[in-house]
Amino acid sequence: MGTARTPVRTSVRTPARTPRIRRPGRLAAEAGALLLAAAVAFPLYWMVLSAFKPAGEVQSTEPVPWTLHPSLDAFRRVFQQQDFGRYFLNSLFVAGAVVIASALIAFLAATAVTRFRFRFRTTLMIMFLVAQMVPVEALTIPLFFLMRDVGDAVPGIGLNTLGSLILPHLAFSLPFAIWMLRGFVRAVPEALEEAAYLDGATRARFLWQILFPLVFPGLVATSVFSFISTWNDFLFAKSFIISATENSTLPMALLVFFKPDENDWGGIMAASTVMTIPVLVFFVLVQRRLVSGLGGAVKD
Image (cartoon, rainbow, N blue to C red; front, side, top):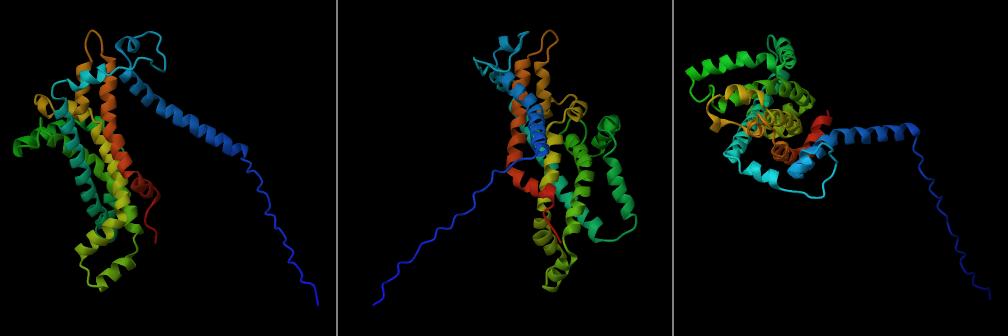
């Protein structure tokens, strides 16, 4: 009788992972990125800090980057300001109208200049690009007279109305939005459009049910630009809203805290902090779409 052999267990050792050594160039790049991020974030930190500082610390000749006695007095002065809520709603209405209108018009225009061939198409795209090079300050006075003349012909759009803020911002947002969305529409394969037509889809159905969802990340990216530029606008609001203060926007509320004898820097920083919150909320809501929109969401 043979003896039973016990199986010999062999242990297989996995090779130990060697520690990943970062290259000096990568470390320098990461350190530079951190320093750049800190430099960009420091003004925002100082704004929020000054909003919570007591008046004595804000006006101190030896400021420190912290406070041991946070206070909400500056925010109370901001929210107790007359018509502050109305200014906030006006800004929200103007920014929302510009974002929605520019997104829809830019989508249709980008589809037209990409999918259709017509005369002066290249010239039109060059004009869109040139329009971005003109400074806003150089067009403020011509736009003032334009809004005055338009108001005489069409009530509700001229000076001292919210329409006088919506139309200029819409005009400045459209060239950038059309130029950017043009690449997204071009990235959608024409074979997809032909397949949709073979399946019985109409042009309108393809436009809104197939093409629109594909270029939606690009719409989000352009909407961020439109929202921020409109929300932070002070030049047009100061120039076009002359006597109808009930139609003023939120940046105009900051003028209350600028006084001839002494500026209320705590109130200015608190109001600026309140103005920044909607921008941050909007950015958080669209950040995922924004990343894919800037990187290009559609590939052939």
